[in-house]
Image (cartoon, rainbow, N blue to C red):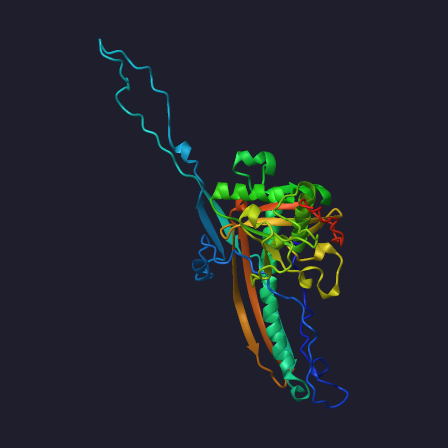
Length: 406
């Protein structure tokens, strides 16, 4: 995970015959072939179209300002809207039964709502572009140029989504909200950034219990189901906790057939064949019987873990759910809701510049975008901070128990 997205591309380098020629040695009829593909799915976030952000109002008034102030009425503790006092002792009235004695006249009371403001701003600029020289266009494959433009637009969508994921995670970690229900403060802590163990071994023992506590808190406090996200390292941590529970207390409904050939129930807990959400995540169903919902697992994508340069400097990785802190590999589980954050991006320049033969003879395409994202309700973003080995082990250290009927 990173909070710094600054990157530069060398300007004014139009594609030339050297870049796009099928061959510069001899004429050939074969086309340029692409290398085998790698996973480059766009990890879609859930905060587009936030109902609290009046995007049309902002976009239609950009000449007046580029910042939108969202005025929110703060939550009300309904029990604080009622005044209650003990009744005075019943008063004796002659020989009759004692009766309620309320003085004539009512003292008026009033409660006033309180408000807060959240300012939504654009905080990032994106630019893509391609250029080609027309002087030598008959000598190269023009399809390379148009393909690069299509790739650039796809890369733009990926980068915008990745930036939002990392922004929201950085905010949830560095500026957590409060835990609103005091009942859960003894287990989750005072804020929505919850530490689950201080070593990989501790996190492995505690992660399922922490997930269940957080789900119970979220549903009970906000009355909605959270959307839960993590990485494949988080999935591995959950599975190891399940294996450990099965080995030590025989939980989770897993059984073994008499021949000891393997599990016959709860296959979804360890299956690699999980439903694909089509959003850069797959749905892990292994804890559904505990949490009554699945968990979104970010697909492994080399673009998020150092890129094709295979950088081992984890501080540069863009995976929003993993981060190295003081040599420890932290894995994050995010509980969120579509209302938690707001995102808006707008293209402010889309241009095509035709070539001028006496002035470079270069044809250019380009787009310039600005994007804004803001966490509106930090209390709706809960982060479980677990630790996991930087490199997963092959050893699951679990053997099938003896068949009880044998």
